[in-house]
Length: 140
Ligand code: ADP
Ligand code: MG
Image 1 (cartoon, rainbow, N blue to C red):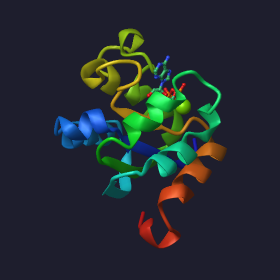
Image 2: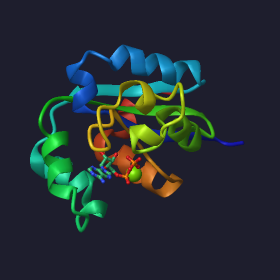
Image 3: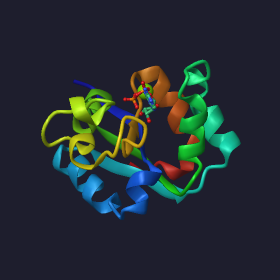
Image 4: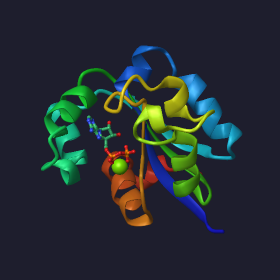
């Protein structure tokens, strides 16, 4: 398996409840290394551009409003098969369908306020990492 990098976001519902450390502990326990991390407050325009792929979905407006409502922690996770592994640690989008022990099962409030984002493929991971981090910020 290849060493990959993926973009992760700890969403406003989780930063608000002081869960950054608890969520990071799950990533690290799964063998994912946090190789870059920063806390930022997205503008509606910045959140809207990040989630542009969902523009036509009925929840887009609500999603952009939520993601720009309070600070988020954006991070790059590195490890073997990191993209799929992170999706496993995150759990299903809807916390009611998320497996035991996953971040979303333990912490998510709803299908919208579901605590974490994770890239879904190598192409999207590369674009999403570059959206938030310069090469100089990725120290490995
Ligand atoms: P994932 O984050 O698991 O990759 P999607 O890419 O399908 O899920 O959706 C992006 C985000 O949009 C979700 O994490 C969630 O915050 C929000 N979302 C998805 N579906 C819904 C929905 N039916 N109602 C409200 N928000 C939603
Ligand atoms: Mg997605």
